[in-house]
Image: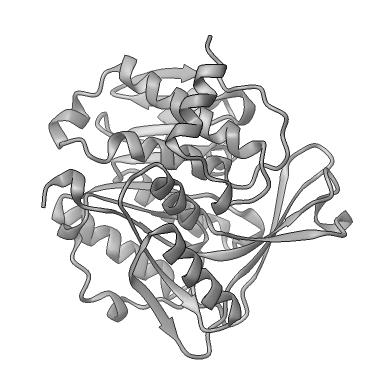
Length: 327
């Protein structure tokens, strides 16, 4: 099996997002929510699958009605479910999302006996990192034990096996108990992954204020680590081999922003996952600029839709969007 035929493994939470249909009313002011499958790592898995990348998903899914329908949705998408863990008595995490009066996203999670935070190391002992071309993880799965230690241990296994890794902390501040401990945990991971994706708000939370470039440089990443920072409608910035490049975003009529960053990350991975180590290290800035533009287009499309996983665009949709938004 060659590198390109091996699937990407995305690991972390899969939840049901309840997304506000009342524009700019925030969580407290919303009267109507729409249920959609979501969770940042799962959104990325869905995005990759829709972009034609063979994808597997790893998570612990609740043994309730919500969990059963999530399994069905994974199967519908064609995402491999060999590494889905089930345990009697666990429930599916529910996440509520809305835009506040300034257009900023608000999130609140309900995790009573949640499956996704109860994943244990012994439940993954048969997983072989060599079976995959790429490993992506992150988000709220790192907030609670035993799942946090389980995913970090899995990351170490992939690093040891020489499989390329990516990480998106996808910080949800209102779910963090001890901010200092959580920041230290994130920094330890961020210095060792091959591809790091942050929103501008994530970056400020971890590194403080002072501008994107100064904050990125303070992370202490290596020259061969690709750092991506999304800036909402302003586009994205990449830090690669000691140099910054940026790509403008696209102006669209925004319906809802849940999943925009995940679509961006899926688009990036889809363009880079099959590269050898030598090809990755030789990545030039013209090619990288094209990757950013492709990813910005994917994020812009998602912003025009309601939903998370099922808002992810196909490669044809991104291609058509770029054709109609030539600069």
